[in-house]
Image 1 (cartoon, rainbow, N blue to C red):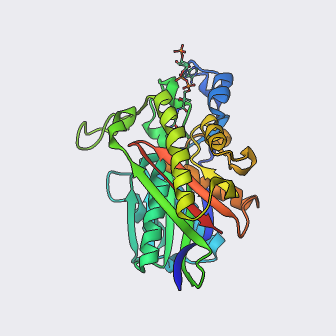
Image 2: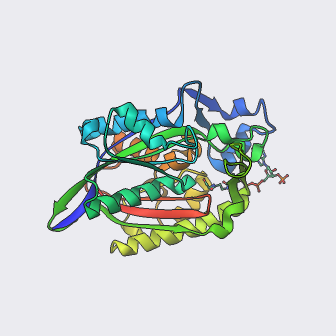
Length: 322
Ligand code: UT7
């Protein structure tokens, strides 16, 4: 028998407030035209008072549990990917755990910025396949609006807040045809200084603000994403043309287009939400997955590939048969 992690449900949560490009153009020297042409972004959600990484994560987790038809007590593992936790510690995952009323399960955060959800899914899948967990909540949740420099037009227009969650469950079958078929992660710390936050508890004792050399990140993103996608598809015994749905990290519509072109994948098979969510870092992949599951595009039996690249650099991809 082959033990695999099966996708049981997805959910997401977005802050109530929607901010348009035109609104941003009132406070920084930018325009709707520039933002749409260079990034594809039209709107983003921005967290308000009382909305935090942990509250958004909890709402997304509840929606994913509902979709899976499960109760909080069915969960024995929570992994939350975030670069914007409510506090330095405790882990935001334990806040979600408490809010859901789960008194005993494994709960921790992973920090891999925009690739965080791919890192979290890969760790959850390993724990499920090893028998260390049976039902996992895997969440990506961020409030990047709180670490943006709102005077820096090169970064403040690019990001939004939100959360996405999935429930993974163990299933044993003779052929192992369903579930997570392959996952691959990478990191290369030589590129720390291209995308980082200029503060932290052990250096400045401040939270800091996001800094990015966008053009250089863009170039690396297209190369690394095409490469890890081909690599993970080969691990699962497929080629990129076999992909039914690519659910990529939503950083920039031009990165999605360039990656799809490099893989010769039709744009219709790429899920795109960057226009309405902007870049929500670790939340972007599960948010996009939830949108495409709920609108009926992704169906049972489809071959779905998730991918992301972010600060570190970190990047990764995973192949999943629904
Ligand atoms: O999630 C982690 C991964 N992150 C990413 O993948 C982000 C990757 N990078 C990008 O998406 C793009 O590089 C950006 C969207 C950040 C920038 O687009 P670009 O086409 O690379 O523009 P650029 O940085 O080369 O800037 C072009 C011009 C500059 O002006 P000059 O020097 O040509 O006069 C910028 O100052 O656009 C200017 N600019 C802006 N103008 C209006 C930069 N930001 C803005 C803005 N509005 N918001």
